[in-house]
Image (cartoon, chains in turn purple, cyan):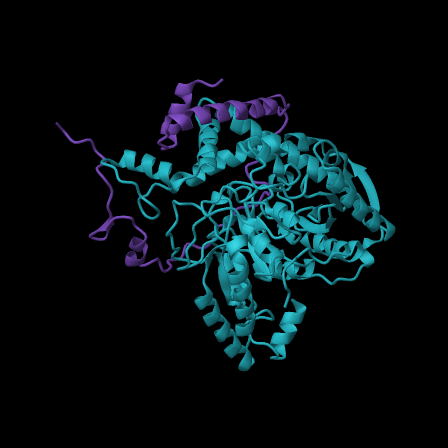
Length: 97
Length: 479
């Protein structure tokens, strides 16, 4: 069984707030998932490189041309909280005592 | 579709009448089917009227100008809600169209609405949708498959003549098979992914679903091509719908991999596919037993890669620029709470697994190992195509399962047992109906080919339709 603290660490890395019940659940899921990862570890891959994309394409660069971008008002429309042309978020830096 | 385009061309029917017909079907069937998340009838009718005007002036945008379509709800449509079946994006309206959507609009196709899926395309039954399950039109107690379940069910039920889906590990082919329609997962890179909400960018592809192979090929011809906005589409070229003569079948070498006909395969599925293979052999095809032994690792490799890429793709949902935001006093808590409230259980599970395999201490043992096994799988597949022209397998191990039947996540992941290999190796794969089981549930045959061999897959699929005697398994009214 994978360590519970490890599950909590992953949740923090993933920026996910989990309930106690969820932590229990994902502890189980991670553990069972890792058995399938173990199966892969038995495959001999010493003679091959990894594949990140199935079809190897030479990445063609397009011309670097100035194009039209989206208008600021339109982009801000989707924002949950907007102020003075900015996306507003809660405090990022801890307040000083 | 030929009949519809003929009626439109000769002005015996208007696009408005066609759209009204399908909107009527949607109104009648949606209360039980739930294939759509959003229906935009007003806009579709406006598009239809514009199309009728173009036809009256003899300047249609394409042969299919005025024939409506439905789009899976993880493909961006400007101004039209794109929820990905997630609470997180419940009110998200994209500012731009995906390239595939622009292509359809440029061909004059009115967009009737957005279809249901598993949240962020993670699942095989639409049971993970935040907006309820899509029922199978052939048996309402059963799932439509997934993740493109809404797109498949809507076509099968006659709510729409064709639709777009996305396929990362089987998400077009499995629901197509479950609902008795045709679905293609194209060669990786032949269709632009620009504006398609990413699940696993190295595996995702957009593809067509339709009642016949010919319609699927027609729709694919509107989608395929390079797009400067998607660097991975660089190798793409124009696709032309093939001719449908049957001569090519004589001497065609069909690989039949034994690994796909062994454990876990339902006997009725095996029987149907073998019957189809027999029919092809009678017509002159040569069946060659082959081995694709690396398929043993396909699901595990797929799971490792898809969760890793998904955890990274979904990092952008933080409640800052769009989407739902939870109240909190500081930003870090806001991110964690917004994600906790916005995502469903399967999405969280995959983010957790993906974060684990990408974390510094486990990266090499899991993620990098899986990428290397992927190379072996790809080599195995490409080696097979030195011997054979196409590979035929069942699309899924079973017919559509009952809603609620799959209790564990691993059980659900096994739905992709026969389909994930095509995504991992980037090859195209077509699912064609090949009969029904004793309960009347549709079964699918999967035809896989080498990179960019869609034309051959369509011709063979068309041949299967004719020889096995099932043109689509749609249950709904057809115009």
